[in-house]
Image (cartoon, rainbow, N blue to C red; front, side, top):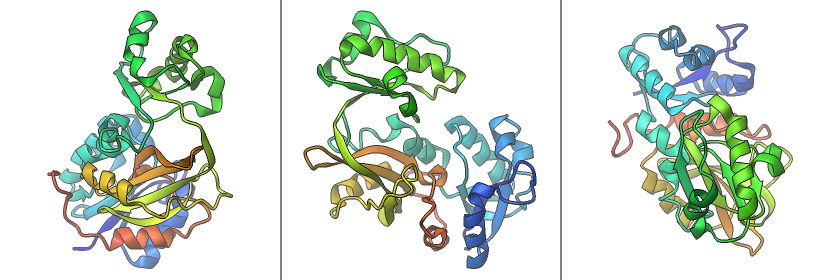
Amino acid sequence: MTVGFLLCSDPLRPRRADPHFEREARAVREAGAPLALVDHDALVAGRVGEAVARVPAGFGPAWYRGWMLRAERYAELEEALLARGCRLLTGARAYRSGHELPGWIDCFAGLTPQTVVVPLEPGQEPPAGERLVRLTADLGPGGFVVKDYVKSRKHEWLEACYAPDPAALERVAARFVELQGDDLAGGLVVRRFEEFEGRQARVWWLDGEAVFAGPHPDEPDGEATGPGDLGAVRAAVRGLEARFVTTDLVRRADGAWRVIEVGDGQVSDWPAGADPALLVGALAGARAGAAPGER
């Protein structure tokens, strides 16, 4: 069965792919794979029927390649597409596993900084005082990095991301939650700070195998390709039971490679300097079945 692609449409010209994904759209067309467009703005607004209106009935199995979606919105997208005869090759459960930190953190224990997760609803106050001290006691007395289940505010490093010691953690956590507001994804995450050096690398995984390794998109001039031996990371990826994910790695000051983020491959940004045909070819050639444990 032929595997298709769903890309985000251009908000101003809905019959065309969003300019950010036009290179991938061109690669899909050149590969001869089915292509349909979804309206990301409508998805985010909860108008899921409108969002999938341009997906032909009976479109079949497909990969989504587009902007990030909350896990709840992705589940709505999956259901709406199923009603049109289109099955996402990453199901909603697998999407959450790759997209949100609580879904992948246990699989990567020992490969990633030690982490504490505190579920929060938007508008809920983060833990403070003695409760925060107790929650993070196992992370040690050193520095901390604060984020939510999906994103950090690394561009506000000293204000809302990095706390040099426990005394600063309460202030940084509160400021992070305040700035995230309604965009807070899942809750508060506090990670042990580790000293890194060099550029980040992103490795793309499909069905448990690395299909591409290159620079992180935030560092377009980088040439990092990650460690030569990916055996431990491969084992962790396979433990996720999600077909298509990315891992962001960087070298720690002592030389050890560390996984600092895992993402669902469908919403991970492809590096500008790499040929999208590499990714499209791998995805188009993937089996049309679901991953183990998915419906």
